[in-house]
Image 1 (tube, rainbow, N blue to C red):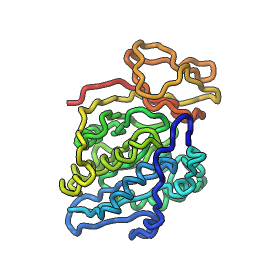
Image 2 (cartoon, rainbow, N blue to C red):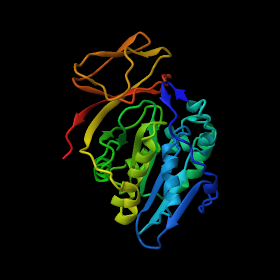
Image 3 (cartoon, one colour):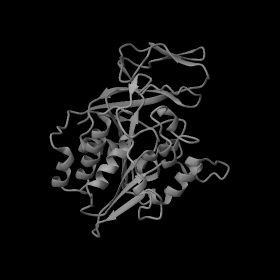
Image 4 (cartoon, rainbow, N blue to C red):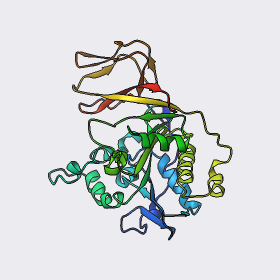
Length: 320
């Protein structure tokens, strides 16, 4: 089956057996080592049509992962959207009412006038997320471009991404004008806080390679944070070679102002536009041009709605 020329190469795991969990929150399970250490959490299906995170968490459950120290939580986030996934219409299950990953500020979560299926779920999860020290949020992308680690704008995020070592390309950015991601919530985005978070984009939503990369990245994240030992990690990392990483600094998103936004070419992501001032799109009648030479286009969207990010603009930087 195809969607926008992308074959459906992954199957959505059955997560029904994980519903009860042991935290009082459906689809959230915590394993406590009984030893001091951080609370580490891996999250999946923030967007219901992104299957690779569910594949990674299912793998960890089936291999009886347990933390060496602290606590390890595995959580399926936007379950209502995920359970509606239909390979015949795979984009429809991204969310039920609104994007779960644009809600993560106190102003939004505390606003009694805002209601949606996603807000109800986020509000139920919020007290639990408040206890998390280290977060890996597992995602995938619309287009079949190289996977990306979204490390946020802070040095601590870049350093953690470097330690994890996967995937090859690391993006440092501040997110979207439309709302904050979970990885940018509270202490995760506070330079004075020891909390830290990463968001990995494991490739195109349904490409076969996204599932294994989600597992590999999860295992590397757990290994470098002392949650699992090398023997456990080797069950899923055998034969995996860490690449030489490249870092892209995003200077900002292009936020859509008009209904009629259109790119001038069929950009798929990571195109490098050599000259500043090159027109890449029109927002209504207004041209959108690159602000500097060698501008990298990050995750150009097919969801071109006012208020959303059409694309993020960045440039390659050195990372010592």
